[in-house]
Length: 245
Ligand SMILES: Nc1ncnc2c1ncn2[C@@H]1O[C@H](COP(=O)(O)OP(=O)(O)OP(=O)(O)O)[C@@H](O)[C@H]1O
Ligand SMILES: [Mg+2]
Image 1 (cartoon, rainbow, N blue to C red):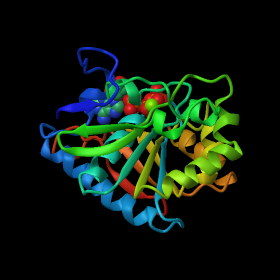
Image 2: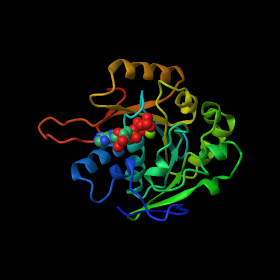
Image 3: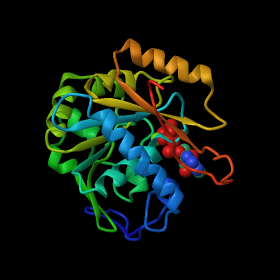
Image 4: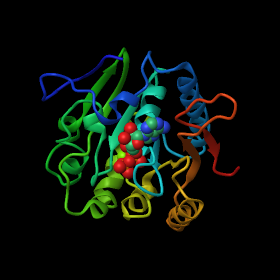
């Protein structure tokens, strides 16, 4: 997929990190199908929430479980349907979205929340082989991510953004090491919890869910990332189950 961004700093696009996992026409059919199933499940689950646009956060118990890949591909999968989509990188400690989409990471959400720039300055538009969606990168790494994300300014900003889009997908930090995700969960329509096959432990999921439920977060379901499908002998990226199952 040909990925272009406005306001690109580097001269030559360098596909790096998660860029190679972003859905394209070249993505194997089975993987694309998994994301379409995830899209359907999320659209039903998120519609239970209130508000005009749906704000869906993607998190996991611990680092490196596939949050950012899942979040970016959710944005792509929904944008494919013609939905108006915004992707925000709220992992202010370890941002990866900007690098994966080959753009500058600042100005971004941290700069907006700090009052250092407006929404328009931080907003970029992705054109990924004709699939279009908007992106707000993380911005400069702040000293106080939890306070910034849990602030009154953040609540207002996300309420206003969700009114301008059909879906806002938010890449979040892991739940257990830091409190950022718990702090922002109050302004999410729903949270998707990624667990990585062969890596995430049952207790870690349990503790992460306890923390989120204590904060009244609406966990709408799980993605099992990297699962081996029995019989198919192929690695798949995503498999979705509703939180209630
Ligand atoms: N299903 C998969 N198959 C192959 N590689 C994967 C898969 N899922 C994740 N990865 C790789 O694992 C690493 C972590 O993925 P990703 O950045 O999406 O996780 P994360 O949960 O957002 O991590 P962090 O906590 O650091 O933000 C990346 O290098 C990514 O390319
Ligand atoms: Mg990440």
